[in-house]
Amino acid sequence: MSLAMPMANSAAVHPSLPTPPPEFRNVAVIGAGAAGLCAALELRREGHKVVVYERENQLGGTWVYTPEVESDPIGVNPNRKVVHSSLYASLRTNLPREVMGFRCFPFLPSNKPGRDSRRFPGHAEVLEYLKDFSGEFNIGEMVRYGTEVWQVSLDGDRNWVVKSRKMDGSEESSEVYDAVVVCQGHYTEPRIAEIAGIDKWPGKQIHSHNYRTPDAFLDQIVLLIGNSASAVDLSQDLLGFAKEVHVSSRSDVNELGILKPHDNIYMHPMIENAYEDGRISFCDGTIVKADVILHCTGYKYHHPFLDTNGIISVEDNRVGPLYKHVFPPKLAPFLSFVGIPWKVIPFPLFELQSKWIAGVLSGWISLPSAEEMLADVEAFYISLEQSGTPKRYTHQMGLHQFEYNDWLALESRSPPTEAWRKPMYVVTGQWRKRSCETYRDDWEADELISLAHLDFQKANSLAEE
Image (cartoon, rainbow, N blue to C red; front, side):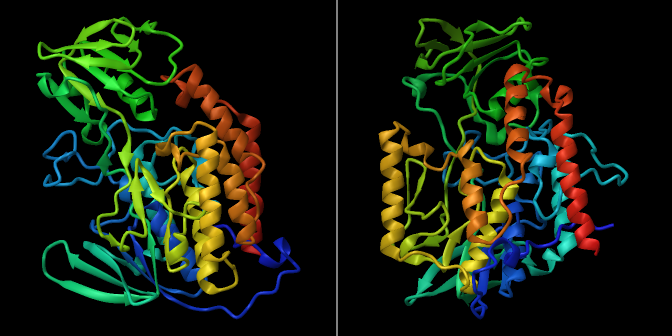
């Protein structure tokens, strides 16, 4: 039985809206991770001709695990060999599979041999789910594997030239497209904490991008910087191996000092200074002598292949200007981005962004004028400044994602967010905060799970009629 959900009935959502004759475009999609696969599907559903470029030899993007790490452990050397995976071996999802999956293809246990049926599965199960998704909709036939895009540039007023090369060096090509959708993710260019005195500090530094297993840190004193999901996971991963684990965060920390019930993990405020004798001092006056600094400090947006003559820039991790985090006003609708927002449930957001883009390119969804879109972006920036939100958090959404998703759904004539999805996301966050070590296995929300599965069953019944 197929798990694919039926497409939204546009007439039922907006019965009074006329649908103009569609326009069909030649579209290049950059990346065959979750965002690229979803974009390809929605573009093809609208009748567009799609080519997906993927530098690796398989789909999955950031969900493809490799034990390989980069030659530069902190990822700042521009000449380093870049490894695109940021997964660590023990990674499990921090969201339940029901809330995480695409709306058109629920992330349910497959019951296939060797698969991970846990509600919070490991990374390998997510990759298998993406393979199932691709197989269900024959998305793989649109993908050129082992093909790296090294330049995307504007040819004249509208057309885009995509220059690519085979990773084995066998072939280079230059092709012209009506539109380009950038879906290459943002987990390959590490952000590093700025620490006074670090140039003379004698220890080792590594970014979480290059962390795979804890055994390399046996009997060492490790200082993690950050309080994100990866920092929490890696601090737990290191407990049985490192001599001591110290966590420094610029966020408000409720409990400083030793973190009970453990006897070798400690919470600290921000770092003040690093010294050439190996010591690290913190803002509260405490001092630790560490062997390793592990930066769990996130990533930079990085599009080195994209040549827009300065129309799009990245400044303090703000990609802009982008109307609704998707379209650069001066280049819309023929250049767009899927997956820029963070601190979100990614797959449903990718799905709705992709539906919007596909509908705009078809011509039945209209965008405001370039001037109006720029004014909207500027008003958004002003609101962030007035609320004291740093520029680097421009694309952070959190609970605002649901309002954003519902706006996208309305624009693309799709149903709004399901009644259970936001509460399930919120409940998961509460469980994670109460028990970061065990929430994945202790988590309970039976009523919400029942509502989700009822939705899945209803949609599947409609698909079979």
